[in-house]
Length: 165
Image 1 (cartoon, one colour):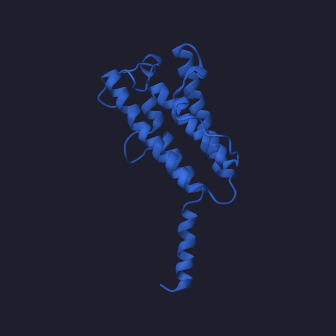
Image 2 (cartoon, helix red, strand yellow):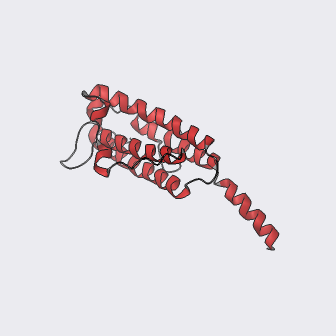
Image 3 (cartoon, helix red, strand yellow):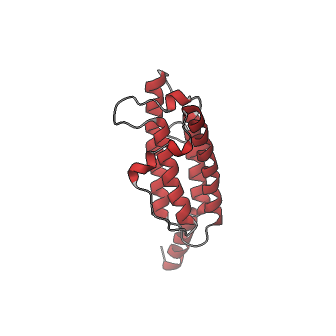
């Protein structure tokens, strides 16, 4: 392949990794039909506050804590896309759910609403981003979401006895 074709090929493959590509990927993880199973919204569907805040074993996270953690790290990404270099949260603090409410019902409702709002904020931030995207961080947050999605699906199955999350 001569240099001009190689340059054109590289430009085309780079354009595949634009905000549109990442928007599609985050949308697939959140509420699409991903190849690996169910989307985050589908897995969270039907999770009651009682299930969300039940700890299956001491020192293990609850579904609610995992959702709070996902929210925290997605906010770091949104800040980065907006060129806001706020300090990253301490890892241990990202699992805290107290800020969402004192009762499980109220906190769970607020967590789910914050997750939904944040998903929309991320898509908007991706759409408005000009210049180079922090690709490593974008891929990292996608992988992070899928990893915790698997944990949430496992916990939901374990806590509800359902065959499928």
